[in-house]
Length: 423
Length: 116
Image: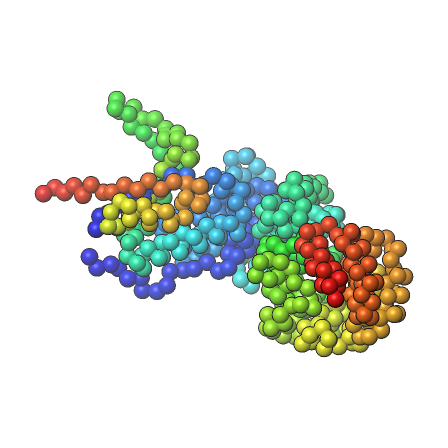
């Protein structure tokens, strides 16, 4: 029996289709009906996506999958509002008739208008009325389509804690009757700076290897960069600082694949195969840093410049350390942090000035943020190695081992100690 | 060659908590399976799903709402497959995404009754 041949390739889903579709629909529908219906809208969007999976798994993906899910979600939201007899009130609060809301929502979902709703939602999730932890959890939940258990896995917290952070945020947003608006001009700088901080921390959460590697954490980095890019494409929010933040994220993201070996173990900067670094992302980072030029560079500018200097070096030995030291000097005038002092000291040691580097580290040893910070003694160990003081290096790495709690860190340190003791 | 019906039950447990990314993975798994079956020719028809709600006509012609089976036992859909024999069809069923999703696949050969 002759079989019908499909004339063209069946429609495929783009990567992260459901994740980003969920964020789009929640942003637009919440903008239409108000933040008080956020829970209901999240539920209905979830239902619509489940319905899509069931409908498509055997029959294939429709030509307009986004439109399919939107229609189901919209109908389910309207049905739920009618059933709960809050329909009229919801419409009245939104000052719209049902038909008007539908046409509004469809406009908002169009390609050129969609960023506006997403940006409003970013400012809601990063509202200054929420604590920092809740801002990050909400951003992951609402704008990145993470489930509670994915947030927990990504942020290395319990599912219970993740749930609490999201619930706490929703309660505050409802109590304070937060509107799905862009910040007024007078608040713009301060509100944008909160968004920067949230995205920066979110990226760092994903990038940190302190508890070993988990692929989901790479997704957090990717999502933070995606949202930052969204800000960069908006005429008001694309400030030099926003652009520098994107450059910073991209220059770190370029090294994501090289940071983990085939067994999932973390690989330190010095030992990374630099041919695995993503040249395209490094190029994008350079372009965005170029576009971020300003007379008053932010810490993101300086951090991006430092990260790119590493990206441009063929090896640790060939890294242009004097440039990095200069950038840290500048960075410390913008934002005084013992972590920057520690990193500058390492750069000093790598450039040959071991004694002053060690002295500088001792000067911050008792700083509140440095207590029990195993990387401090790791840095001392590295500097002592550079100065060929094997005994002192062993002492420092042993201290680092005592301060470390993560198994993969301990494995790295034990390896180091064995090598040193054998030398 | 013989024709078989794959009868799917369950597989939606925990779906309510599934993340969008997990849904994407589920979709991909089904899409790949259907596509490989269509290309190789053993999948005659991807089939369809069945809605959960329905009614049941009793011998006395009374009609009751139902079926009220547990979602694990509820027939949720079917596909049509061609294979050399039952053993070969079962091997094909093992590779479909249903077992990994926590559901079952009942493999039944069509009797092939004809009017002649």
